[in-house]
Image (cartoon, helix red, strand yellow):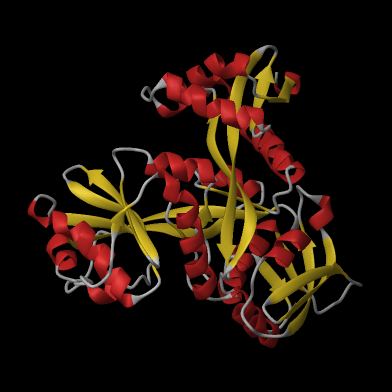
Length: 386
């Protein structure tokens, strides 16, 4: 019976059970030793949550300790991954029980935001998640990249010792561009990627690229460049493999400079994977985010069935690129949002879209225009799947 189920911390003793549920959820495959090694890091920091029936673990999920860029500012974000539920327990509320435990743990760890890639949107929308952005993969002809130039830029191979430099270079770019969505991974993970012989990494004074072979072609996982010359040099470095790889897949923003530099446009079958966002602590999430340089005051009425602390009447104040959400008296003119609508607005979804989907009501046309300007900017995107 589901009333006998309980949320637990996953421990090392649970990992054999988790591995079995994982195989029944995702199919066979993977390296069990690598799974255990990775899992122990989440266990040590209390970021692996499960649901148990008696002594048996029947569901589990991990929390990645990310930071995410929002209008050029870093916001702590709990990345939810590896969500699994044993087949015999599906459709019985176990997934919701697990996710409530995961979200509560994220709040306890101090994360104002949570993000995930959904296997199904139904469960996550029920809990207040909504689409925040996408992960884009574009395919270009290698020969187009090879001839982009940049030969005056000094480029060298990168290794594990450059991990912190990569974070600094990416941070400088995302802050300057007021990026929305890209992640900052833990330093240890970046060190691991740069130490992996299957990845090729090169760095210049104001940028870097990380790429690898993928089914006979090349995948650019991330390219950061602070100038046109460095953009050209790093793309040409990858394109130098054109004699073997006919195509290069680029994970990038939809408005990345590569679209303006390559002679031919990307193939028409670009892949788009959607990810979802949720505000766990609305005042903290607003305070941490960057905003467009506009000034506004707006009354909000928030309704969050999962986190009572978010529910109520608020005053949203934005000025000088910063925001604050403070308790306020009820207003008949308040913009009304549920958890899903608030998440989508935070990610820059226009209020007209939210109204069309029934996720926003109240407020005014003038207020909508001001809020769209404040939360707007470049489309939110991630480069990484987790």
